[in-house]
Image (cartoon, rainbow, N blue to C red; front, side, top):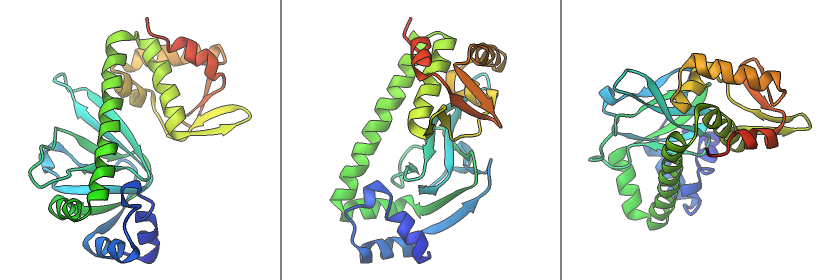
Length: 229
């Protein structure tokens, strides 16, 4: 791991309490991977036994429904931690795939478990992050139960704007290349339905799409669309 890699690793929130030497030891145990877009990092069949630290890029976590439909669980960005956090943890049937060229540091789940034992501050930060993740996923389940498809799409675009948005005088551009199928996977709807809803939003000037990047031109109008039924 290079000095630049260590500098990026130090930006991971859960490691903020580690000293330089502790980070260097962590770096010596870790491998760094430069991955192309659409690279499958792990799948349920691969039985991933590693913890991953996303240094740069975007990664989606998803599951496959009983009908064989991809369901996006979360979109991760630089600074996020994912994978297995101990050597006996259930992989939960998740897939991880890059959405753009990405850089990750990899540590075995066993080594990461040892790190947590030795550094209580890191373990506490991880607990905080996992609690926030569970809260977000519970919110997603509520969205699916209480919102209709147009409202789910509007809410998802707003959330992506908050997490991956670039502000400008023209609105908020979501810094992700999203196909209609990608959005359909996030809201548990058909691609055809998503296309119809997005087309209506474009005609009304609420959003615009250029090179697979959605720009939210009028966030307040989108918020109205996202209200619970």
